Length: 248
Image (tube, rainbow, N blue to C red):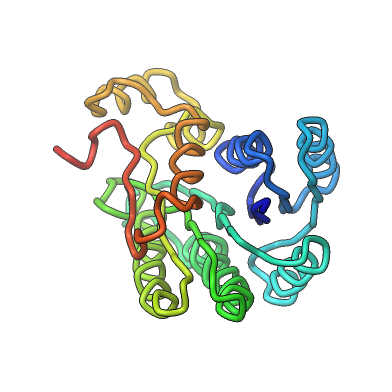
């Protein structure tokens, strides 16, 4: 049976790579984001690969839109087997003495509230089914502190806690909840994270034992593993895909 997969924040970077990877595996895919034109183009690209695919516009910061997103996915495909909660933002990066309440609210509303609301409505469907796999996107900043990124790190630590708690609630019913915690990934977010400065990027990558950023496809492959039957006893975990950064 084909997996039915919902991906939030699917239009760029890791989300896009994950959608393409699931399409190549033959899944039926609902991709979501805030930009309709880009979303429709991605859905067409997935269909060209032979997948059943729909773009469903939603902003994960708003519960009514998240509820509708999950309901539309189930109405279109009949069930929900996998959810990838990828929508996120790095927010405004600055030393903590220069941080603002406005940046905290903006970052947490997407990274934390958005993940919580997505889990709420995805788990309702999966608990009723008695099966499902949810993968939340965390970060190495959910495992360690990062100077200049205190608000972002706090939000990803929160995602890790939500993941563990949801896994405990879903385990007996056959619903698995895990997180993937990437290190630097070759995306636009990495460029923004280093201030669009190649010197800053080189300095950051020099702290990674693997001496490079991950490709988005490498993160997508880990997500596919967590969504598969090969990981059927794996829940409540956060998998660091970080070139050994957090092993230091």
